[in-house]
Image (cartoon, rainbow, N blue to C red; front, side, top):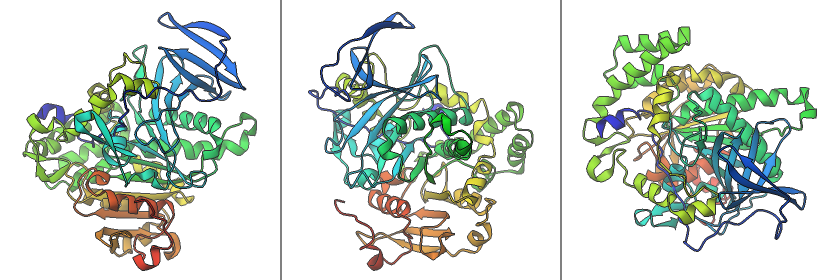
Length: 511
């Protein structure tokens, strides 16, 4: 069990999964009684039916029906979409796959906002690992429902982040969660993963342009601290090119902010925050950054992870929450038994059918082969913060938050790398005072906040939040506080604002 943990030093996000009644069936997007227009075979001799209706294209495979979305600029990509009624049937949902050629397939699950979806921002949530499904966030942390009854059911989550936001949960890279590869293809670096996520967003917003006009916030946890800067960098760079190629018909993704919770973003600084770090270890990481090759980055990743995280994992405490003990025999290898519940739920044939997932596909919360592949590329040792500088200087906002009981991606290291992030807000952040954060609904002191930019009237351009009484999964440990923080952030309302002033500004109804 300890050996398994040592491969996941970066931050597991525990799948938040949707419970579907057995009678729930897949609902096809668009029209009625489609008429078949054709029949073709995919690799593997699978028979696939295809037809058009009401100006839309549909296909049927694995006994499941999808709307098919394509874009001329992304010739190798297609989006297969269905409309489930799980988890929270009161809101509109979409799920399905981004198909990259005929071999790679990324699974997504989207929920509309519970409040004014036509005006709500769009958020994408990613879990880390690397190799862990975003169903962890969905069913265990911040999604519309929480996994329950050992995976047999789900319960309504009143603190879901879709209270005031439209939200996408994406399983990426391929071979994570419900995502899969048919030809053995793999993705083992964050830059490559970022390009696939960008293509997904273009196809998604092409099919659902009603979500394209609002601000887009890219949020992640743990190893998502490495994923997200790479993804945001691709989006930001592509946005700069749009005026040069209007004929491509691309959608401008209104990237408004990056949000990272207990992330692994700058290991040169973050690993140095672990008390027993030695000079030799920091030299290995510096060598990786100087030469930027596998030959220098892989030794740094292997040595630092084994030497720094093994003692934590062998301490008998939960490495993701130092306040509690971990017994792998009862809590599971990742110290949260709900991880197993999520796998039970997501492997239910009725759930798969409702989500448009091949009933033969096996779901795993975390794929250790993907985890190891990223490790053997030294992906976590790269200078990820460099990818954020230009976009932050250009107005994309950055929120870093961390629970104060996490040992894997601790709050001290997260604040320290932010103190050295070279942006136009560096001097202001360096001298910014740490202030108290009080939640609007309960008036609870939830943590502290330190911010630069925003002119005092906004939530800041570079903001760091320490969350009290919380470990690695802040939305699980402190759901009300996490929703308060996220809602104020996307509405650009300071966390330091007096609650008597903030209450009229933030519509927290229904919480």
